[in-house]
Amino acid sequence: MSTNRITDGTERAVIENVLDRNREALVETVRGLSEADARRRLVVSLTTPISLVKHAAAAERIWFQRFWAGLDEAECDGYSKRDEGTFAVADDESVADVIAEFERASRRSREIAARFDLDDTKDFPAEGTVSMRWTLLAMIEEFARHAGHGDILREQIDQAPHPKPGR
Image 1 (cartoon, rainbow, N blue to C red):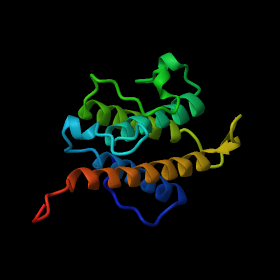
Image 2 (cartoon, rainbow, N blue to C red):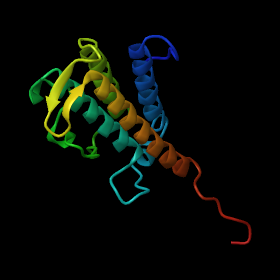
Image 3 (cartoon, rainbow, N blue to C red):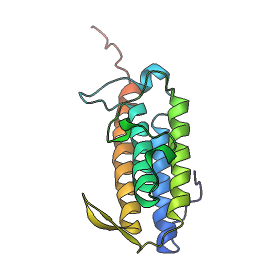
C-alpha cells in the first residue's frame, strides 16, 4: 500500500493516491481485531469489519480483473461465486487472510489500471460506457463508504459498554 501522501500532481497521481488512502483506511478498521471481534455482527446485515474488507477484495477483482482485464473467473486470484456483491466470509478465513487477499487484489488492480489511460472506456451493461477515471473514482467512493462503516463498527467494538455506577 502507498504511504506517499501526494496531494498535488497529475490528476492520475492524485486519484490513485486517494484510492490507496481509502484502501489503507479500510484495512485499518479491521487490523488488530480478534477473530471474534472482526466477525461481530452489530447491525442487521452481514456487515462486519472483516466482511467489509472481503467485499472490497471482491470489488477489486470484479472491476479490474474481470471487467478491465477481461479475465475469466478461473484467472482471478481468490475469485468465487461469493464475489457477486456479498459480504460472506468463510469460517476458515482469518483476518490476516482477508487483509492479504485484499492487498493482493489491490496490487493487481494497480497493475491492471496502469495499462489504461484515464479516458479509456469500456461498455458495462449496468452502467453504460465507463472510463478508467470513472472506475477509479467509483472505487474511491466504495472504499470510503466502507471505511466509514468500518470506523463506526470499530468504534462500537473498541468502546464496549461499561457498567455505570449504581447499576
